[in-house]
Image (cartoon, rainbow, N blue to C red; front, top):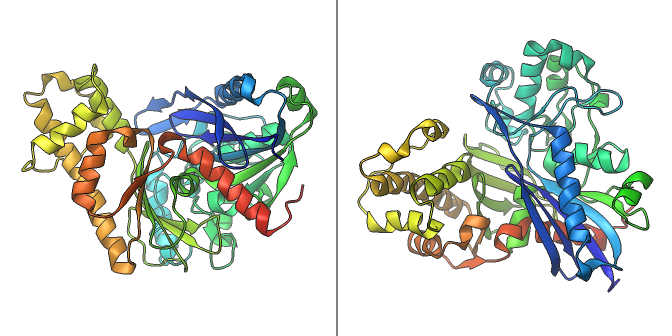
Length: 434
């Protein structure tokens, strides 16, 4: 066991991370590669073949490091973004690009589904159907790409697709699939009414089980290609927000994590499924114990913050950007939009005040979320994660505005550590089977 190492993959929106970790959560090697999105208006897609090649590249980079050579690969663990999927044929060959969770093309379909599910928040994990959800985009695909939809045998989420490419087995976990809008938490099964609307059956989707419960061995080809001398098992460890929260330190109700990634996410756990969700909230099954999670999110935070930093403070760190908030305490908030990325920000007369107004919007949103959590439970500790949390000025902003004990653990690679913690937790309480 001491010589065992776990390969952990974190399938983010804009990059893919890989690490080799020991059973005591020590990261021996870590690699990261940016991953391009194909954007066209309000649609976001990925090249699925490029996605797999990038995964393979970061894995081989990690395995090439001397510190992990001659170690036994105990398992390969996968965590990643929710709602990103790709239609595939019976042989699991992609029929088109993968559709990313940021994609909002299915607004009309979401409006239609709202009328079909008036009590949606009581069982689906969302207040109402949204354009970015897997369920809405499947309906869009049926209406707008009928040939692709009819030829598709399965519609795997990106983590399920990768697991299949590695194992030739189609399986999922309740945490990831529970965030698709397709799941009914009252019945613990796929929503039958949605299946009827889509004209699909459960056979078009994977078997859904507890996180890290089912493993499948990598194929002989993958073992040979990656120079792994035995067929290690692959496990799905849930959505990246859950693993990031776990890796940051979240443990019990009352703990809160704030993840500064592509989305700004405020994450907490509760003992019961939360009904009556707000529009910017998602609920689901937390991978550890019998808890459920609730997260609030600002979906475009990381995209906008990175754009502002690169355009207006290109030679400086994020500290320079966040300092604009500290220097302009009385600034009015400015609602950000992704479309701002099409503007020439260099033409703005007062760029510091412009940035401060956008940051004020995000800080106010964060404060409202924390205040809402405080109405439901006493907050113990606030944990920060995500690459942007490395900013010392951002830490000062959080300390000033949140007024709770704040701890930073693992930062950008919290998802890797969290996936391992979740796997080991499941492994300890029940026998893992293949």
